[in-house]
Length: 286
Image (tube, rainbow, N blue to C red):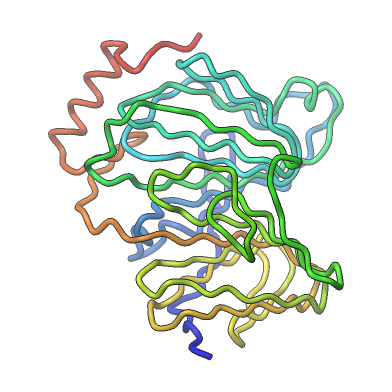
């Protein structure tokens, strides 16, 4: 076997974003990105009391030049955008948005979820786009859990939910512009699985809860493993019941200029994005 070594394991830091606190393992310290992954935020698990104030209500805001992706692990998230997409995705589903040339969207715990109460837990991931794709037409792909194909082992100790990419001949439904691989892993204690990853791709693994051994290295709750590009094999064993998110992608290798919700290649493009948003060219969401 040709195992990948782990470059670094990062413990998430609590970040205040207005009224919302999220766990952030990326970016952190001197690691600004793991190309093409720019940011990973983990919200929750947090309890929504029935009929109380919405615990996650992020009003209309713009994006350009990348893909903001929301994985819903618990609860229900309501997405609306300036391209007339209006979608509630429940536990186990995904909201994959390509901001491209510009879009305005909002995210909130769904109205029925707020009325009934329950736990909400999501991960939001920002995936960069290469210069040639930064101004593509925006689009939204939303899938419920029953629309996500999966692989399960014979012992029913491992379930790999394939959002995009392929695992053991199971192909994900997301049409990724840049060939991103994204799996969520539900593992019972003692469960084992292995990935074979192309050596030219960057790979990261985030542990939402539980404890797992990754290529012989133990990691636990809210920790992110960043792998070196020195092997193809990644082995995971659940030391306790665990939930993880596995991601890989081909590095873009371009300069990144970021200002708030815009991710471009230089400051001139950032200024143009700000102007276009102010002029309503990214649409309006009321």
